[in-house]
Image (cartoon, rainbow, N blue to C red):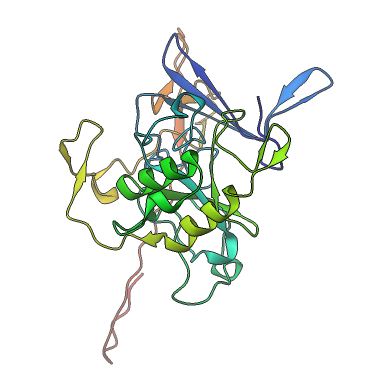
Length: 282
């Protein structure tokens, strides 16, 4: 099922090859499915973009499957992963930070939050150890709070006028209405959680999903050359092949003729001089 609203996200997991197919603004019109954006990644990967392949359907450059509260997780004391969080666009400062590779809007002028009260896309938010989970009214709220105390949640999207925790459609995590009746305790629970969330600004290290120490590779040490392109024919040779996002490879079909394609790259060098000498440079 596609998500309602403007974004229309949809995730399809292929159990045969373990690939996750992600769609943005997926709609069925006149019997034909169309999407404004598509990405394919391995379900065994981190879910985040890389330097060479930074793009995906979520604003932060990740899949919308990442961080979802799932139907299968309802009833757990704690969800075994960090949560996906969306905040109002006016609460952002321009420029994504690791592990995000993209952001929702371009240009610093778009983000108009107060200085010192803004967050970068990709920031980790957590509840402090002192947060009293037992004061929350609903078991779903208490599970969300325990998860935020242990794993936290990453800012992955921009909203308008709200702070969101994202859940699988029909999963039962949203308790605003139950069986058509308003649940008075859910909104105060969410307001209490929102008021106590804090940005993580220092840490002693990371652990992987098995609890073992893990050091994320910095962007500067990863592959800066993307096989995405742009590719074009060279010296009269026609273009061929296509980029495969799930493997980060450029795949070509078998051919008996000689073909040449090229990838156009732009390299910017900035020279900065100080002092009063007559040196010049390009």
